[in-house]
Length: 241
Image 1 (cartoon, rainbow, N blue to C red):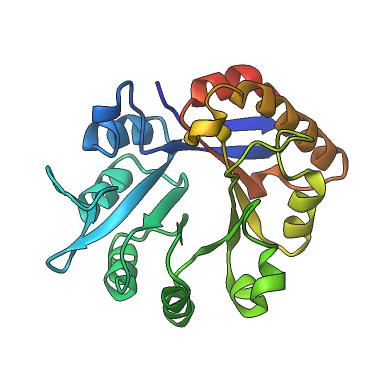
Image 2 (tube, helix red, strand yellow; image 1 turned 90 degrees about the vertical axis):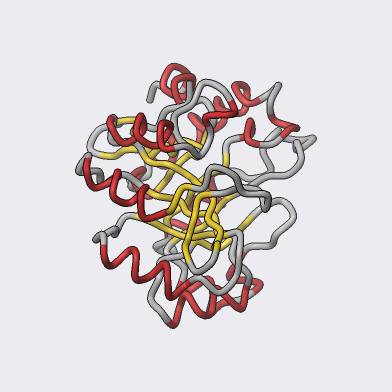
């Protein structure tokens, strides 16, 4: 089962985001059922956004069946009085105006968009829509690539595409600290979301624990961090901070 929760440590919490909702089989991903289960428990979700005939819908792939309007997800979110994090993976360009209006209409404030194109990112800046910028083993430190896009970002989507030979993870706590010092939230993509990480994710979670302890000892706010995972129940068991 996929859940989303917050790991308490003192007065600080690491946010956990349920990848495509709470599901037990892949056919339930990105469904109203999966979102409802997450929102009932006040958990965050990651989901995929496309546009069909002027309407924003939930869909990871181009071939869209059983369309769910994004507005229905927002309505469901508010029915459960949620304030958990919504991570909106933008799969199509030019939807910033429609999205901004939906967010305003339903008073959604704890959200971010990510994976949009650079031209679209500029439009999100102009329209004051919260976005995260990417950083990974294949993508340089964002402030080294584009200082303006990094400056305006609410946070960083910290991804990994290959297993590091030296440490397993390509990043250490200093990367997290650098973003936190720049007042950026960080959403860490858990390894099992990629094929390479499905056999080693628990081992790499132990490194997360080490990093989080270091940050806590140095008085950084763990609530600025999030983990997007397929296995939050396992996260709860293994990252018992």
